[in-house]
Image 1 (tube, rainbow, N blue to C red):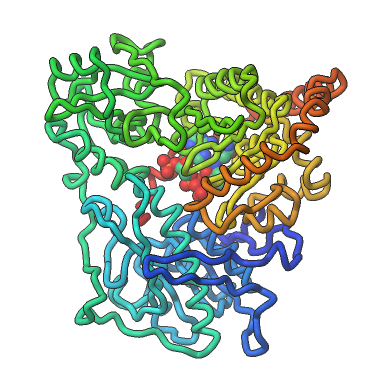
Image 2: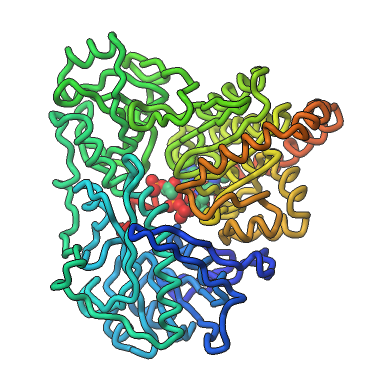
Length: 627
Ligand code: COA
């Protein structure tokens, strides 16, 4: 990843984002976060760097420029330091890279390799590991075991690399409560672990700047609760369908999104993802569960399958990867690649789209699209796995938005996206698996364009509220709303360059309107992530409502209700209705879409796009994983 890679057998990603205006606002760090000990940590802003503190050169040594590495880079830059990302390829190349970069500090936000002695023995350049585990925890499967064992509290530790993996002296450690119901491993890593890791990074930098030393790991201390854990093996991740559904779900979640639990379905060995216990079987479904055997697939809903488990329970599995394949797919697409529609599986009707206010379906059934309604506001959730939106999902979303549009009891539509991701644009995996990927790319981009068109032409006040991060077309979907809000820890990837696409989703209309043509060009020409503060300073988003995702939804509701009750909002509605339906506006939108799609046709025919997409959808399967 990265616009211009300097390679010496290892990848270096440039430290400076081309588009990032160097304003103090753009660089101010993330704010307070409450840890399990109830401490509030205030960010040390760039402008607050004292005379004794010098600008440090960090090398972020990692397996991949993943979400933790992206946040570490943004965090260090916000503190006024330089951060070069170096992707480990070989030991020799890494040592050469260090000689080239000459860092003051090597920080490893996501590294699964043993650090060579020549690196950790060099006390002039400390090499610091970000370990996603509590103090004393060691090993490659930290979060996996924490979720497997049902831990109520977990944490992150920054330690100095040493001869023994994860056993070096400790610079900082922070814990958090696992308050959410049933997070997956990736979700816990991407949200809670990354948030406290940034607190640890700030503490480390401040200790380093003031000449403090790390303390040794001491298992005799009563508050050191972690221990060395073995790598979680395939046996530990294998599900037995005779267990009750909630126990199987726990096993699936502790290795979702990588490497996935193992199980046998329809006599095929598969990796399992996206587990949701069915807790509300109606009479027919209950009868079906009662009469079938554990392991039997008893129905499907929107490409997810419902599997019978022990104790007459049932579990939804939304995604599957055949052991013989590298591509993770919606379950029925993986299991019945040639059947259209899927064969012999009863369709299990979706529950009502409108849920009681504040209710999450994830713990009780499989439901991607749902609505909360209150005080003339509709909160529309589209919780698609990994934020990827395939053609059929986009069509269902368009249909729901169209229904909201018709509802005269709604003035404000808040687009919430999903809890882990707002949206990452078109679904590269289902495109990859299609008979004709170019044609499926075309169908998918048109379907997502239809979603965005509904937002742009909505007669309601539209607000995009990003609980989760967004990428490519997902960012452009969010900025199509009248207002776009997020929290300080969100990260946006407004570029399509990673896939070598021009992009659509009416970005040529929405992006320059918000940030101007020059910044729009810079943002779409770089693959650098953009922090929420940078996005606000650039005008890409309209507001940051709070410091992290945990209290964000309640802030969104509070603010949306204030807006909906403000007489000025209602006063502007007729004007908005007139504007969005005016022929010139519609013609301008159509022209944007036509121009974008012409360029996308060319992209979809290019071998570069197909090669990049193929590498992207199979990459994680080829990497070992520590997250
Ligand atoms: N289609 C299918 N899967 C997608 C996806 C997409 N558009 N975007 C992300 N994912 C999946 C990843 O494969 C990964 O899956 P896994 O954990 O099951 O292996 C997961 O979502 C998380 O993505 P990852 O890349 O690990 O997260 P990140 O925070 O490091 O990076 C992005 C975020 C958005 C930069 C990166 O995911 C990306 O470039 N996505 C593609 C965006 C795109 O080009 N969309 C199409 C054009 S609209």
